[in-house]
Image (cartoon, rainbow, N blue to C red; front, side, top):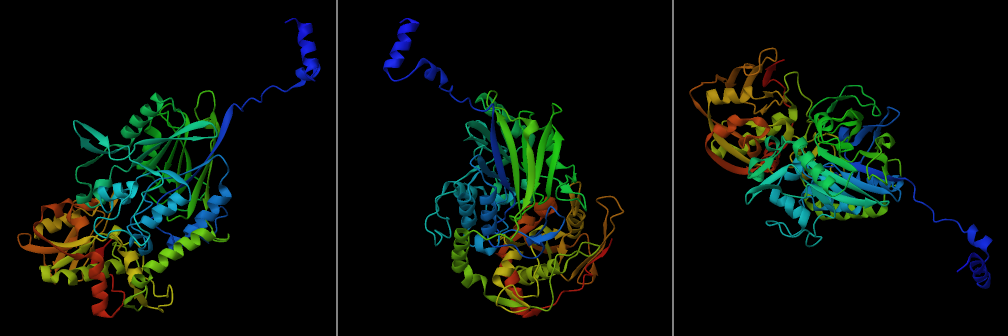
Length: 561
């Protein structure tokens, strides 16, 4: 058709050539796509607002404010979200949880995480507290093999993907991750890959029996394998969710980095340069950092405190042509989950439902205290609450022949405070409060160690990874000297007032975490004639019942500096 005929045809149709030419061309998409990530880490089942120091955070003004609680998390997330948002997490969402969540094997917390839109999370070490098979149940669904279904009915599984690129199990002739190593999400027309890894130290900080047959590979090696796999699938925008982190220098403002380089920043520096950012957890610290990747390019490295007190917001742009994150566009901030906003009503109702279900157990008084029993250490590392727990463990294992008891400090999760937390009255300790102190349901046991082995065990309180002072029962005393080399710091060990006999045999009580070599106390695994007894929490409850009222003991069982 000639140009003239084209014009006539257009005119016949009620159009003009001028009008046709005036039609705008199809709008081209922007060269980059905006994406917002909102991240949580180390929630530990804190559906209710955490109390004490665990419920406070430092805001952007440097002020200490109340923070955390599921209903406030939901409210803040609603304010922070836009249409291009993905919500992720960095592990320890469950485990070491308050009774409200733990009584039902943390199903309430996992449901809450799904309800607020978490789409992927790295596994944390505490996800293995009840063993990896229980973690698989939490991911995939099904009722608990011992306790059955919760009051909510059959568990349907997590609504999000747990990622575990470095947790391997032999399958046939190959080692394969027990859960997905990575996952891909599409948002605003682009694809983002998420990789999850957990600290490779997990075998030393969880009950060994629950992870038997698993290998915890180096985090960087596993992340790099996953990155190569994502690249083969033409995914170039990559985020590493890692349950490992660094500490923070004292006095650091929350908007500063201030991180003391450690295991977390090693991962952030050494991981494949295809990985664009590293969101971390585990150390319960709060920081926003920039590190150099192996190619020398800047890479975000962040952590968002713990117990639901902080939400990390990351804004970024993805190049639509290459599919990669534009590093220069990455902006991050840690938002404190303050309690000065209206709590989310649906979440409040959800939490109250579970409170009602567990209240008959949680509110039962077990005894009284005359003052706070805290985890505040003496110069030698001894704590009042640790001492009381060790005393209760010794009393609860006497019928198994125990002569002394030792408690790991990391298993004491919160303080017992004198001031009432509800309607029970000042000084009254409830089952729920005791559970918050010892939430792991570890089994107590007694093993036989020679005096020389007990001495060697106490020397294992110091490792290159740090110090962990065991809390002794009242009849065990020793002196420490941190100025001496590791392996020669403990002296003057006495039991019932008598010097330790290196050749004699002593029956030592401890929880199964320690007896299995947890926290690198490997000498425990050399013990003989091990027998198991009650749950650790049950020994504490029975001790309170027997004593009636307990006062803070003097911190004189461990001497030295």
